[in-house]
Length: 263
Image 1: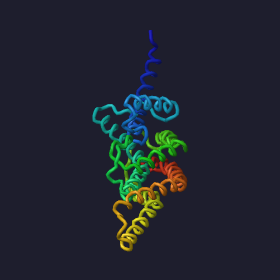
Image 2: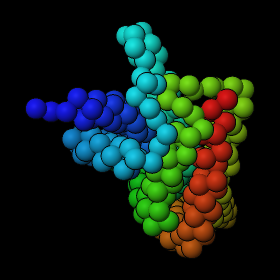
Image 3: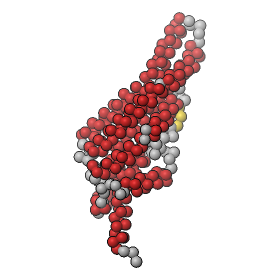
Image 4: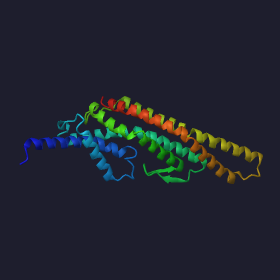
């Protein structure tokens, strides 16, 4: 016969694990890489359960914190999903900046119509944007960026008890500043290749006026594409430290953001 004390402990631990999974699950489903459409839902669920098991013995969560009413449980779930979405959106802003930069450079090179399907976000993107995005993902994994979320989840249970999300003015201001920095970062990424293609356009225009016998519409397109690809490759030397700096800044901001959401 099962001991009543052991059964009660088991049920309490199960409730605590469910509460942890309600916060961990949306974050893994929304953040880049694990939130990709190419990652099967079964894998995301297993990752959620595994992360919850790792956090179970180290987070200060009690079974008594689980709401007893259905309406209270719905509010609890919405609060936890919103918390995960706010953390995930900050990382997505970095990858969105890479996509915007690649899209703009691709249009300047004349490859705006040569779009491909982004397997991570499920939308159409340029070839340059896809290249930079894949490199950004590799850099993110190389600097252990995914560990930032595990650390942030751990400390978030200390600062923000389950179901006690507080969204204040500072949160909205942080989101607005993050969005503005996204566009600044995209300009920094695209600057070398964009400037080279821009001067290539100017040179083609001068040649068209001075030597009208040259068919610029035929010659200019491959030249712009070639110049663009050359400077996209050369800019990778600059791209690497820029992305590492952004991910390091993300590692400092995420815990502070989680602390601010605790009120």
